[in-house]
Length: 180
Image (cartoon, rainbow, N blue to C red; front, side, top):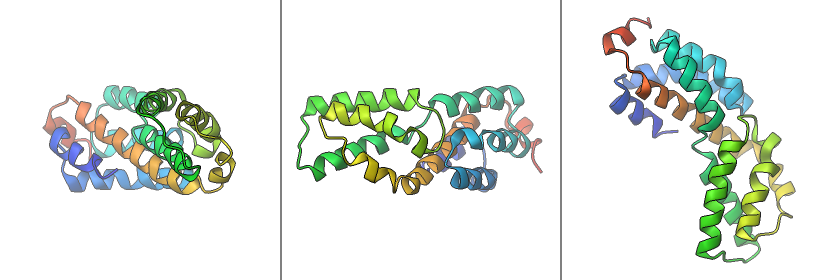
């Protein structure tokens, strides 16, 4: 999430204060819903109305980002699977970890941007299987999934907004006229 700020400022030609103010309502909705998809309307609104990003950019980039660009998911899901391996005293081989990393990437693209509790098992089971770790802890971890999911969603929507700012090819003056 924090990497989104310098990305937007350095590559997206927007001030830190302006980007941060644009993100406040986006992050509030993300925090309360744990859903990138549920946050999409406010992301589009803030990108267009506050950051001055044209509809053609925001209307294409943000839905696409919500659908497939969940930057935090592969690392977070792989970390959970490695935690389970550690709990069971297993040491996955390099090949298993490489396979699990590829599965984590594929799963992050293939799952929906809904709260993690909805897709927890379908996201985690393939990664655990690639690592060769038991699935028995997954139901217990689901009980606390809401807390890390809040932070994953905050990271995802912040990155989505930063990427949208970076991909906006309009002139800086044109972008500045869209916000008060």
